[in-house]
Amino acid sequence: MNSPLTTDVPAAGYVHGYSRREARRLGDQADTLATLLHSGTSYPPGSRVLEVGCGVGAQTVHLVTGSPGVRLVAVDLSDDSLAEARARVAAHAPQAHVEWCRADLFDLPFADATFDHVFVCFVLEHLPDPVRALAGLRRVLRPGGTVTVIEGDHGSAFFHPDSAWASAAVRCLVRLQAAAGGNALIGRELQPLLTAAGYRDVRVAPRTVYADPSRPELVRGFTRDTFVAMVEGVREEALAARLVSPEDWDRGLADLRRTAGPDGTFHYVFFKGLAVNPADGGACGE
Amino acid sequence: MNSPLTTDVPAAGYVHGYSRREARRLGDQADTLATLLHSGTSYPPGSRVLEVGCGVGAQTVHLVTGSPGVRLVAVDLSDDSLAEARARVAAHAPQAHVEWCRADLFDLPFADATFDHVFVCFVLEHLPDPVRALAGLRRVLRPGGTVTVIEGDHGSAFFHPDSAWASAAVRCLVRLQAAAGGNALIGRELQPLLTAAGYRDVRVAPRTVYADPSRPELVRGFTRDTFVAMVEGVREEALAARLVSPEDWDRGLADLRRTAGPDGTFHYVFFKGLAVNPADGGACGE
Image (cartoon, rainbow over all chains, first blue to last red; front, side, top):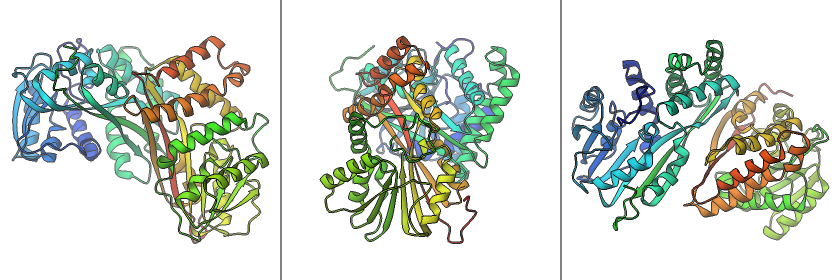
């Protein structure tokens, strides 16, 4: 749900924009979801880890906190995002060893087999050719090293009360991301994508967010401040692209907000994949 | 995904029918899903437990296996289903103490507060008024006793490769169930439904099935033999109701079967709720 990482994306670019409000949304989201997304990811001290598409550092903080002693290299295309990420890590994990690097995922300035592990979160969703991206990462990953990939899937969003207008508003986001060269439904594809990119021992599992009135922190932190906020954020783009009328949009958002109300429920799935770079080179798609 | 339990349902009745093939499908489904659905449900020996809408006993077997020593009363509207359920339990759990009772959920022949726990699986989805059903069960449940409810939600089904035809075929099932007075999207509503029926300490959690080629037993046992088989089972009804053309149906089913193929993935959510019958009578909806 964040982090652009390629120059292949057309001018529309990063669907969520780079505003300060968006940076805060990403930070809120990462905090609410940290346990859900990061549990199970812990690299041994001294491991050389690459995070591609670190964006404003929303996940980077949790990565270095969950794996003390790693030597992390965090890469992004945007100097502004890197500066924000550096400040965020300095504030929240000052002891962390992080090198910051402005670079393109498809042209990484690292020697072959530089890293033990690669971490990719909310990046593939913005790329026109995720298999090429994953296959390319194998070059800088040592044989036997692992890649961890986390992506959402907006097709997993369903809610009560159900509403055709709310679903239509969510579909606007999916269509805008597709128009920008991405895929907001990519979570369900992680297993075949990692397999097609030549990785072995591919294991993908859903990480589900389910919020109802008995879980008020999730209703606030996820339904309202993460998901609804994200959809709200593309209003102008959706209207400019004439994907929806202003009236239908407003009704959709009103209905979507009701899912965070006293009788509302909300369901969303992230997918997390772990896979191994084969020692024999495998059928690398590069 | 099974078990009718009311005379309120119009003539179309139980959407999946009562055939021997359907009974086998329900048995396969229950075995594949037993751990997923039943984990966490274990009643102390001697507990008086009511299962409403036991159907052919697909869940009953797992219920008595998971809670040895309970005194179970299993209720269903259909004599044929009860006979089959009795045979199934005799074959798989001969030591179990089960009374079989033909009765209507809305007119149960038991004194007030007869049971310590009530178990309701794949029943509410077939009822026009699930809140009335849940509220009515509180009469036969002792104060402080619990109700456990499990329901699917066909709106949680998404898959790769994505297909508008496959989604349309799934929607046929949803529409047929709605026409029969039920709700195939009820899982997302369990929390508000239990709350509206006057229960306390309502906790609902998703129980997710995610199948991809690295989990071949789930691909066979769930994607193919449970979900696709269930959709296939309503072909004649869907065509008779003119919800879809034969060509679109066949394309939808072909696409749906592909999700069990070598690059396919499939996602589905059941919801499981646990709630307490308040000691003070609460705001009972009866």
